[in-house]
Length: 92
Image 1 (cartoon, rainbow, N blue to C red):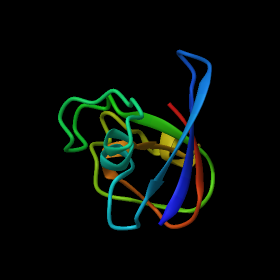
Image 2 (tube, one colour):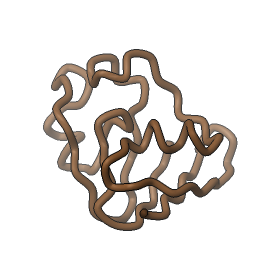
Image 3 (tube, one colour):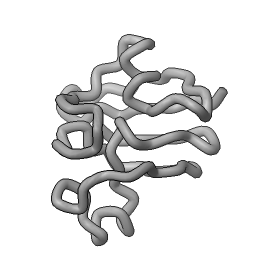
Image 4 (spheres, rainbow, N blue to C red):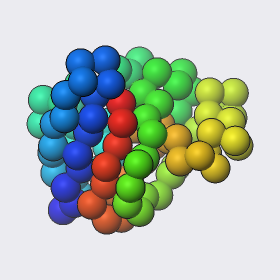
């Protein structure tokens, strides 16, 4: 289990939740009452795009149309396709 601290820019608030390494950040956030917008949960819409500000993670397959190579290099990811590999700090 990893601790994820989520800064929600739209509300200027922080929330924290735990996420096992075999669960996506989106599913863990939703299970713990933390709001991350989403639509498809399949990596194709880009609505759940987040910024990983700290920590190690694994990113599953997603469309380059919604998450470009440049965004990937800058540590943006889709919450529906991101798995923690350490404690994380994210920006929603």
